[in-house]
Image (cartoon, rainbow, N blue to C red; front, side):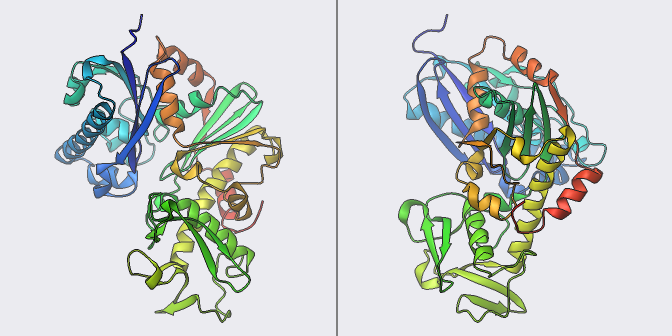
Length: 419
């Protein structure tokens, strides 16, 4: 029987950040701590990690040591913040996408480099901190849940676990990030896929993008004179624009006619907020004198094209799952959005630009750390593998590679319009 002063720890290893939460498996919950993933220095997308370690055991060890050091740091920070000793931790559950799972455990990524993609290991792993280089918790039991497919990791399973409290007939689960996990529950079955959406919606890869941190523009409203008015996280001078801010901005640019449905900036508009440099047009969100960096904050035509590709991938993946079970968007009862991007997303803006179809009948729930919440639930189960096996027995993976249905919807999804 669990002692009053014993704890479990859940960790979600995301591509851009790693988050941890302490829990007691009763009614007690603790603050979530997050730190940047040190692997970002090797590339902002998981494909970068696959490429740099391909057929290179030394580079893989470098990635593994870097990730383990970051997780050690996060664990120590979490324990210190609550004045808890490592002896009080009974179990740690670590979830993440397949690449993060493999790097942490030191497994080769070579099987993920080309089609047909296959992970080195899919089974759940029970180990100890010392066996996987987590010296902070050397004697603590560590559970790494199984992964589903090459690019559908244990974070997707955890998202399903965290959403099970709402057993709607048809619900859509979205964790939008560099590698977006999308799950459709219909009747008693799950369909799952992974959309290669890239880092644009996590505030990376676009020129003035940033993570959803203090100073980030999270929403934009454009008035009748085409002037942008911004909402900034922390009420500070803006430093850049995060993913939810770009969705709000694109929705407003579409509404006011600054861009058309093809995503092209309307060059015939004579506006002080439109600039041209080397034949590339951009729209100014914040003038340099009003920004924290002393530089103009803007969105350019190339930025818009990158976001367009990302949104098309997500839209195409969602519609491919709908097509698989022959349902329409109106059949969805519940929309579950998670991740730092999804939890702050304005659904009306996202729908207006066609990031996802118009889910008019769906109730909405936003959870900032859905995978972490699910990992916490798994930490408190005596036999989490039983719960995971039950979910996987009802789950079908839908690949998007060489899928003509996805290709069709992906092309359609490039349009900025409500579907």
